[in-house]
View 1 (cartoon, rainbow, N blue to C red):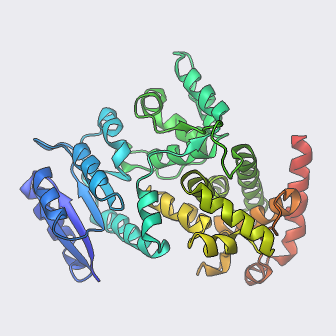
View 2: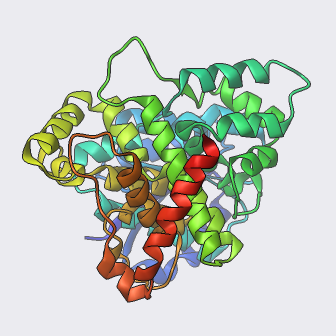
View 3: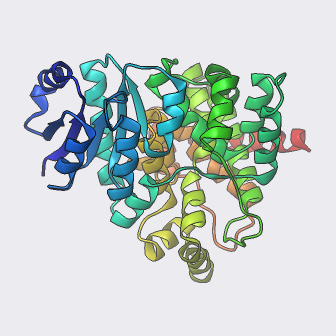
Amino acid sequence: MKKRILFVDDHPLLLRGLKRMLFDMAGEWDMHFAKNGEEALEVLATAPFDVIVSDMMMPGMDGGTLLAETKRRYPSLIRIILSGHPDGGLVLKSIDATHQFLAKPVDGEKLKDVLSRAFSLHDLLADANLKKLVADLRSLPSLPTAYRELTQALQSPDVTMQELGKIISQDVGMTAKLMQMVNSAFFGLPLHISDPIHAAKLLGAEILRGLVLSAQIFSSFDQDKPGPLSIEKFTNHSLAVGSLSQNIAVHEKQEKHTTDDALIAGMLHDIGKLVLAENLPVEYKQAVHFAATKGITFLEAEKTVIGSTHTEVGAYLLGLWGMPKNIVEAVAFHHQPQKCTDKNFRALTAVHAADAVVNQHDNENTFPPASINLEYLAGLGMTDQVSTWQRICTESKHEGD
């Protein structure tokens, strides 16, 4: 079936320009056009749509209001803002309902790429209820200590971006949400981000302060509500995998963009666990128990109990947020790297190896940890490197102690 897109803009010339720009996609996409928010809601009510792309500044109902109403009525719909007004206040107003922000004028190939990636996500996560859950997420829970430190630091007029970035870099949920914002073309920032501190510096204190204190894009993990996932252990594992992933990529003399992607992807590789444990705690706990009693991997238990895995959920979320392909790929396939068609060393390779090594080094679960896929590494000619990567992990642990 054709994918259905609704474009909304009060300028007829821009709508006609979009039609011309995307004319060659008419065989694959069913494109509809509306001149205001009210008309857009009428069109959405006629049939299911996959994506809505709306202008921000429109008379009557603006883009932020439209997408908020769209989210309420059709939570699984992918929502994109396309605007020529780089106003941080507008972003704060609409961030709760928007998955991605694109700046006008948008290049035709860029728009096609964004939409094509959005459509490919539908095949990544099969369960409709999980799609709805992930698309409806506003924020991800953070360590209470990190959340408190950040909100307190933002109250100080003298706080530096280095200090703010360092706090964020110690928390997985904060890092994921920050990366969503810096990967937004709306701010006109570079597409390649090296680490959370770099990301924070690019946004600046005022935008970050507004995002945290006004838009409330970060939320504190509720320690009074017992859950199936220890946020402290989850954080420690994620940071360890991120650090080792980067160290492996550096040791293998990869280019800087690959070592940077390895760090971010390693930090975010298990973000799907955070989503599932927070939103489906009963099912998540059942999956943990099932893995332990059956002696199978957690990935296999998730598939049986929940119907999807944390890798699929995490990749779907980061894809919705417009994260770079290499990072989404690493999250999606870090337990099954053989599914990646590219047979060169990449961020995925480093994350897959680092996750397995860290798990073998520190595994506290009652079920078997995922192991390194030696057949995949053999295809890269890298099986002899495993002992070196294990040594790097051990040495970094000793340095930390």
